[in-house]
Structure formats: C-alpha cells, structure tokens
Image (tube, rainbow, N blue to C red; front, top):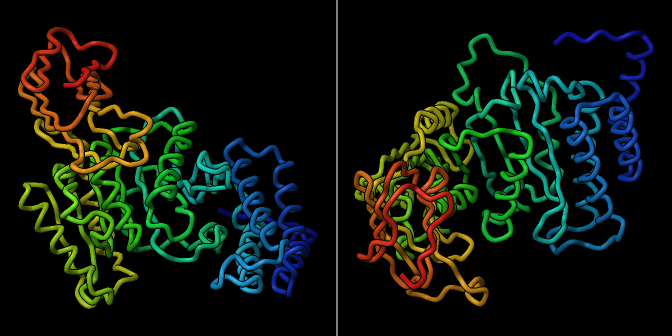
Length: 433
C-alpha cells in the first residue's frame, strides 16, 4: 500500500515517533494512546475496526488501573516490572497506531491485520480478548474454515501479544510460499496468561468462538485447532473432550500432561486426525517420549496420525517447513462423523458428542465420581445402537446438528427400541437408559 503525506503530516509523524522514543511515564503514554484512539474513532471507522480500537484502549486502561494501586501482583511481578512492561507494550501499540496500522481495509479486506477484540468475561466480568485474522477479500456472508491457535507459556501481560501485531509490516517476499491457511479465519484467543487452557482459560476459548460467530460465518466441517507447548497440552485435552468439533488437530512441542493415558479419555478422540510436531532436541525431557507414545497409542487405535520429529531443533522455534507441513496436512481434512465411537465423561461441561449427551443433576456438575459415565454408539445404515454405562438420563439428537441422520431411523438404547420413524426435530430424551 502506498501512503502520501503532506509536509505538515510528515512533521507530525516525525514528532510522534520522537515522543515514542523518549522516556514517558505510564500515565503520559496512556494519555497519548487514548487521544490517538479517539482521533481514529472520529473518522467513522467500520464497526469491527472501531471495536478493535476500543479494545486496545480498554486493555491499556485496564493494565494502567492495576499500576495505579501501586501494589505488586505477585513476588514475580513487581510494580516496577509491570510499569516497564506497560511502557514497552503500550508504546509499541501507540507507535503502530501512528501510521502502519490505521487502515480498516488492511484488517477487513486485505488480510493484513490482526483484530484485537475484547469482551467482559462471563466467568468473572474481567476484560479478556481474542485476536482474529480475516482472509483477504473476507465476505461476512460466506462461511469460512476456522483455524484456532493456542499460545504456549510466555508473557502473562495481556498487552504483550497484541503489541506484537503492531510492529512494522513485513515487506512482501518474492520467493514466499503459498500460505496453506490463506482462505481461513484465524482465531488466537488469550488464555489468561499461562493457564494451559484448562478451567476458566478453556472457557475463554469457547467464549471467543461464540463471539466470533456473531460477525463471522464458519464452516462447521472445517474447524482446526493447534497449540504450542502448554498450548499443545491444552489442545490435547480439548481434543479428548470435544472430538466431534475438529476436522484435524495439531500438537506442537506438546506432552500428555493434561490428558494421561491412564485417565481413559484418549479413546474419545481416536477418529480425529492428529499431527505431532516436535524438535528432536526439545530440552523438556518428557515431551519427545510423550509425543512418541501418543502417536503410538493413536496409531494402534486406527487413528489417522503423523509424527514429525525435526532433526537438531529444540523446543522453540520450530521450523517453517515443519509448521507448513503440519498446517497443510491438517487443512486437507474434513470433519467426518464416525460410524462407531465411544465417549467417557469426566466433566459435566463436556457431557457428550455428536448430539448424544448425558444429563446431570446440579449437585453433580462440580464433580463427577469415578467410574465415569460413558456410552458407545454404532451406526449401520439407518439404525443407531447406543450402549450406556452409569448414565441416568440421555438425550439423542438424530438431526443435522447431532448424528446427522436422515430419513426413517431406528434408535436402540441398551437393547431397547426407543424410536422408529423420521428424524424428529427435537432431541429424544431417554430416562434411565
């Protein structure tokens, strides 16, 4: 993109860069950032871009508010350290908003910007955010594949990752290879720091997806999720709890820490194509053995899977060639409902798959005792047979949002015929199956 400036604009731009390079207090920096956002919002910014700008300001305001109380967050996060981080991260954002990252078309049409979109969390009301990259030529009326990336352990300041998107744009490379994910919507949620994507950090993922659906159409047959390091550990656990969502999954420098084989949940995901990518010299000693064992387990179950151990590579960064191969392999898959699957339930928040869900009492929602509830489903032609264990009430959605059956269907639960006829509009409830 070509930019043209008048002499006065050039002087103003040079002055703003000089100011950014001088020492500023957090308050001075925040004042300058807020003023710049206000200035950009006065230019009738498109709704999504305005949300992006307001989110940046809200995140900066929120982090500054923490500094105002002049109390350390923890023994590892002194007030002085957090003030330095604020100046670094907010300063990078303010600099980017002077020139390189102010064109809404870069974000909404040209596929060249990461939207930072914040929201109040349904968990606790705190300010959380996600980063969204829209494909070039994005059409809000078209359904796109979705690629989700879960970050690993790194900076736990909420301004850090957004600030990285405000650096100088990379010039186009003459020998750049085609991007395997160019036609996709890319979602990078924030996992509340280094939480391995469990508990409330996992909830942030589902909230981000729900929010994304309010302005984007998604192709449900082409959802992909990947993560690096602790993000890979979270991906591994999420795959076991929601295998019906994913066309394929990518694990980068991961482990089975969040989903051990002895817990009995790996069979839940045996039909989800999974690609393991890890450096041969990963210094975290349990990770290479874990990835080899995970690959072996899934292979023995008959899953389509791949293990790529990169020679001479450590924990991070992984090679571009390895990452591109993983992405291309993942994106070649389309979600398929298997004709035979099992599901073990260890959390009430994940009560089933493919429209088969166990119902729980309120008193059971915080903790499910072992042995865990489970079911097995086999589908042949127009007959569905389900066997359950330790489930008091079952609901079965035979329609397009569940088992995807059509025409006349027979449904058997624990050997008893509970439905025969056309697929009903509503899920079928089976009490004490």
